[in-house]
Each structure stands twice: as structure tokens, then as C-alpha cells.
Amino acid sequence: MKSAVLGKAVALAVIVLVLLWFLVQVQNIVAERTDRQREAQRSVADSLASAQTLLAPMLLRECTERWEVEQGEGKERRRVTQERTFTLQALPDTLDIAARATTDLRYRGIFEVKAFVLGATVEAQWASLAALQPQPLHAGGRVTCALPTMRLAVSDARGIRALAVTLQGRTLPVVAGPALAGGGHTLEAAWPAAVSLDDGVVTAKATLELAGTESLAFVPAARATQVKLASDWPHPSFGGSFLPIERTIGDDGFSATWRVTALASRASQQVLGAQPLCRPRAAADPRAAMGQEASARASCIESFDVAFVDPVSAYALADRATKYGLLFIGLTFLGVALIEVTRRLRVHPVQYLLVGLALTMFFLLLVSLGEHVTFAWAYLVAGTACTALLALYGKVVLGGTRRALWFGVALALLYVALYVLLLREQTALVLGSGLLFAVLAAVMLVTRHIDWYQLFGQLGQGSAGVGTPSVEKRNNA
Image (tube, rainbow, N blue to C red; front, side, top):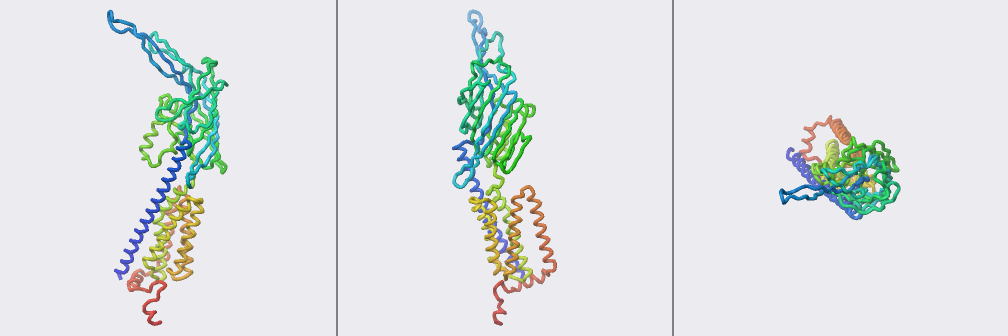
């Protein structure tokens, strides 16, 4: 008796290990397809433009100071002219950006990549240009300066489709500027000779059309920065150093407003200190170590961003589903074993294996179908197919149509429960623990009157198999 029960227990343990190996292979497939999707995103970013960070206008002025010093002694004593070159910078006092981002979906094979086209009007204002007035550092020093230059910066200049700049109402020609240290590309416009540096308030305006992929960020480099952004994408993910103070999200898109002052942000000091202009955090390689990524981003200029994310990622949900795979298989095996115990049936380990393989096929179907249809439809088709297959098979294994129907209903409810767990990420733990408690309570209630000693004794004596008459019955027939 003991050897028969122990043998079946060992066989079931081996089957569970085999099924666990299959689940690991499905997880590897999900990881491989996820990597291919990231490759598609990088491919589009390499051909179009990557995630974008926008640094609004600032003024720069190149200056040179010359002064004379005496060198040597006696007859060798002479006056030598020395010089230093430096750059004066003036960040705007106020910065207002009104922008709209229109999503532009691109494809690499079956993989979808979310690109966007940003149309923005940028208005910067300087209350005075005192920061651009040079002061000599040496006695008798003479300072000469060129006319200022207005500079904008983006993290990927390939995305610039159009740019028009005006200063005090005068249109300025724009040329490509030098690359920023640590990353970023600049665009420069020369100061018009007709505009005096002593005019008082200076206003610059830029109209920009910028393409990018996945995410968009802004640098609050002014004393007071306001950004109003609208988009047709209904699933924004706000991040960076500051969240919007106002936001509206609907099925037809979102709108958000940020207001940041220099009292709350270090961005102005970081810009003046020539820290790198980095891409938004959504564009960072997710495979990078979190510590390394956080360390690298600590040196970047502060920004706030919005990512155009898909809230129902087929691969992310499929990966989460496979993590519940062993629990799913265990609960199904528990249901079969419960029927086997309460109805005095015998289910062969091979039949357990086939049931388990059908369950693992569900996850593979979910991944493959999810690449071509929405996740909900993929889940419905895969779950329906596996439920119908197991219910049909259960008609023979469980010894009757009625039991097979109840088994199919239980499986369908289990699939529904798993779907709810997948969509309710924030409450998955409490829902999952509640489900397990409910299953345990049901098992305890159903089996509370079973005499386990007598039951295992009958199993050890070799009761008739399901769908197969016992030897004694065959002889009597």
C-alpha cells in the first residue's frame, strides 16, 4: 500500500518538475520576444530620433580679457600681455512653453514603437542682461566681447523638423552649434546687431517641431518655468524630478501643466555648470543595473518628463502570467486529485502529465497570439481552447460528462481569476492570497468527512482504473 501511494507521489513530483521546466522555457521565450521588441524600439530610434529632452533658450557671450604684467628683473625686465577667454551665460527669468505631442506609431515587423511629433511654442524673457556685462578680474584689464548668441539644446538633433527663432520681434537664422559635454546637441542664433544690449527686457520666441520616440522631457532652467503639454495619447506616465500640478487624462488624450521655480530646482546651476543633458528615464536600457543607472542619472541636468506607454503590454502581462503558472497547475492538479479521492477514481500519472502540458500550452498560446491581437482577445482564445480541450479529455479521465463539465467550469473560473490578478497589479497580492484561502477552505469542507486511513488502504489495494473495468468485473462478465 505504502509503495503504491509513494510511487504515485514521486511520479507526480517528477511531472511537476517537468512542467516547471516547460514554464521556464516559456518565460525564456517571453524574455526573447521582449528583447526583440526593445531592438525594434532602438532601430526606430536610430532611424528617426531617440527620446527627447528640450533645454529652452539661453544667452551666451564669448569674451576675452587682456592685461599686462611685468616679468624678469633688471635689464631682462619687460611687460608681457596675458589674456583669458571666458563665456558669460544668462538664463531666462521666465520660460513659457505651450506644446502638443501627436503620437506617430511606427512598426518593425510585428513590433509597435510609439513615436511622437512635438509642436511647441517657446517664449523666454530676460528682465535684464546684466549677466552678460563683463567685469575684468585683473588690474588694468581690458575686456572685449562678441555679440551674444542664443542657444537651444535637444538630446537628439535628428528629430528637429522645423525651427524658427525671433528675438525682439526679429527673425534670426539658426545654425547647428557644438555638442554639449556629456550628450546633447545645440542650435544657435546670432544676436542681431540692431538690438542693443541695454534695451532692458529682452524677449525671445522659438517655434519648434520635434520628433522622437517613447518619451519627452523638459529642463526647468529659468527662474520660473511653465510648461503646458497636450497629446492625443491616453496613457501618459509622468516622471522625472517634478510631477505636473494639473493634469487631465481621458480616452482622447491628456493635458498637463508644470510650474517650477529656481527655488525648487537645481537645473539652472547644473546648466551653468555644464552638466550633461540626458535622455528621459523611459529611454534608459532596462537591462542596466538599477544602481548604475541611478548613479549615471545623478549627474544629469534635472528635468521632468512624460512617457507614452502602453498600459497593457502583452509581453509584460504574459511574463506575469507565467509567474503564476506553477500555482495554476498546482490548483488544477488539486482539483483532479480531489475528484479522484472523493469519487474513488484512479488517474494515471501520464494523464496528469497531459493535463499539465495542456495548461502550459495556454501560456505559449497567450504569448504567440498576443503579438497579433489585443491581450484580452489572446487570453480569451487561449483560455477557451485549453478549457475546452481539458473538459473534453476530462470526460474520459474523470469518468463522466457531468464531472467533465464541472471540471471545465472550475478551469474557466480559474482563468478568470488569473486574468483579474494580471490586470489588478496593485491588489494582486491580496486577491491571490484570498483566492488561495478560498481554495483551501473549499478543499477542507469537501474532504472533512473522508477517512484518509481507509482511503489510502483502498488505493494501496489497487482500485479499478478510470474507464477500465477491474479484473474481477471482467471475469464476471
